[in-house]
Length: 297
Image 1 (cartoon, helix red, strand yellow):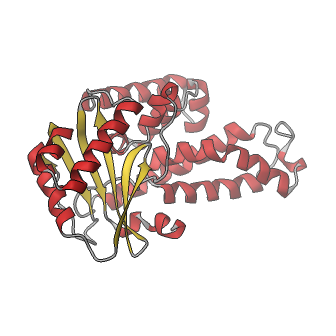
Image 2 (cartoon, one colour):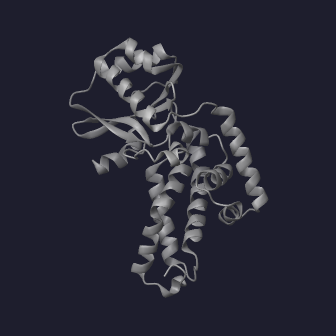
Image 3 (cartoon, one colour):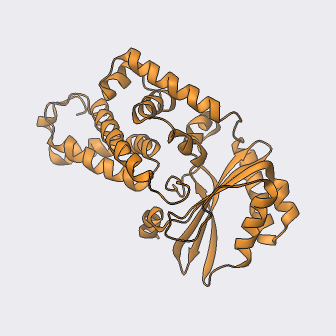
C-alpha cells in the first residue's frame, strides 16, 4: 500500500498511512517550532496536502518535505511576532512526554526546553537541516529534498548550526537515573520550604527563566544564581493561589511539575538537569501556551 500511487488509495487508506507517520512527523514539527499546538496545526495542513496529492510513491519522504517547509514558513513569521514579545520567550511545554531509553538519551534531550531555546538562535534553514540530520538521522540527500537545496548546502547549514549550539551548550545533561534523583530532591526541598536543601540541588550559576508573555505576572528578566533562584521559588510557594494542586509530570522528557488551580493548568515547571545539579528552571505561565493542556484537562 505504501508504494502504490496515491491516486489509487482510498481516503481511509490515506488516513492510515498518515497516522503511521504521525509520531515521527510530530517529533519533527515540535522540535522545529517549540510548540505542540503549532506542530499540530502544521500536521493538519500537511494531511490536507497529502490527501489532495496524486502519484506519491513514497509518502514518508513526501510528508517530511511538506512538514519541513510548512515549519520553516511558520518560523519565519514567528520571528517577527517574537520581536515584540514581553519578557523571555519559552517553548510551549510538552507535558507527559516521558523520558526516552538511555540509548536514545540524545534524542530525548533534543526535546528539552534548554535545547529548544538554543535552537531559536538558528535561522529556520539551519534549524531544519540540524533537526533533520543530527536529531532525526536523515541523510543529507534526504535533507536536500526537504529543503530544496543541494546536499553540500545542507551540510553547511547543519555545520553552522552545530557550531552555534556547541558554543552555547558546553555541559552535558544528567543521565535519566540521576535526573530523577535530582528532581526528587529539588521538589522535596520546595515542598518543605527548605532554602539550604533547595540551594544544594542547584548549581551555583543556575538560572530561572519565567514566561508570562506580558499576560500574567512573571519575572521579566532571567534570575541568576542559586540563592536568588531558590528564594524566588520559595517565595512563590509561600503564596499559593486558592485551589492550587501540584502534580509531578514528565515535561519535555524530564521530571517537572504541573500546577493546577481548580483543576485547570496554571503553571508548568521544567528542569534543565546537569550531572551535579539543576542548572536551569523554566516556568511557563503564559495562558496561551497552556491551552493545549487545558483542553486535555
